[in-house]
Length: 126
Image (cartoon, rainbow, N blue to C red):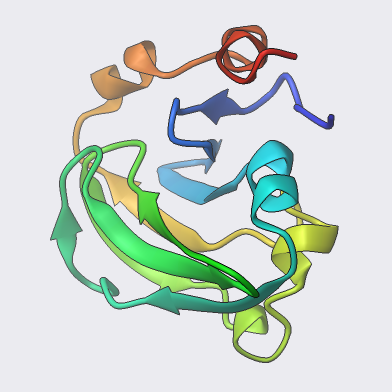
């Protein structure tokens, strides 16, 4: 199971990484493996303010649809357009080309409540 130490994680299986003031969000390697082949990613919150743990979109796999929960409060700035034609990038490269959204963060102190890789390993029993 691939869990980069430089990311923060949620109990809902999202990861978050910062590039300056912008946060990049995706789902974990564990989540994509549990979902199976991802066939569609739907994000309907571009330019919208969302709160921590709000649903910001869905990931559709062959047999299920799963909500995506925001790790932090902020505004969704961008959707990874590569996923429109290649949603399987979430399966093949969940921490790289398979990122899902970029967002601004309203309250950086919320980061304190997110999980480290070690904490997330405990959540998934790894």
